[in-house]
Amino acid sequence: VYEMALAHVGIDVADGGRVWEAFRKDMEVRGHQMKKTTHDLCKLWQRELSVPLAGMDAVMMQFEQWANKNTTVAAAAVSEQMKDEVRKAYARARPQLAQREPFEKAIAGSGGMMEEGGPNWEKLNAWMEYLAMEEREGTIARVKCLYERALKIYALVPGLWMNYLRACEGKAVGACAEDAVDVCQRAVRYCWGSGELWAWLVRSLERAKRPEEAVIKAEQGMGMLQELPDEGVAVVVG
Image 1 (spheres, rainbow, N blue to C red):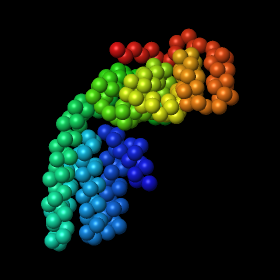
Image 2 (image 1 turned 180 degrees about the vertical axis):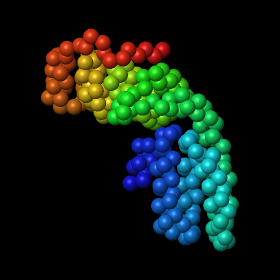
Image 3 (image 1 turned 60 degrees about the vertical axis):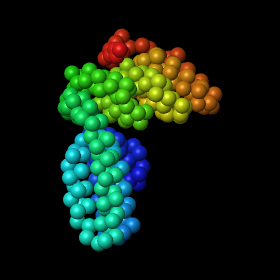
């Protein structure tokens, strides 16, 4: 279960640390004084600290304190071997967090679709700048993670979905045709008035070799489309 959670949100700069912490605590409860479990927990610390996450400085301090509590010869041997590896992982990841911290600060207080007051539209440009940086500097997984975060808040912006799809294709995420279908299907549910998103859905269904009925249904939806006078919020990202 934890591995599934980490696969979905483990690299979320803002909230991913919560999942890692829960995983660590669970492993400790299951017998952290056993040699194998001590080694496994060290590996988990190393995995976590290799990811740029908010609060990782405190996590590194917690690791140092935990490692110094090992008293048995076997545990100490493992700890000394792992300490350097964990520190190196942290040293590589910390500059990546520093690069993202100004962006995280800029998007703070963005609100949400389900929150009172709704999205903070003044924060949208800050999200776009963050997304542009991640597309330049980040990995495929990071690009997807950040777009998913943004779309939890600004799902009614057609341009954001289209940028997501373009970024996926540019980063080779589109190699998995099913991923593109999923994104497109969600996009047209939120932005049913966007003809471009409907057209993208049709293309993605064809590329994924979905049944002809599914393609026809999407084409019918596009044919029945009545364009909105203003497709939500106009967003242009260079």
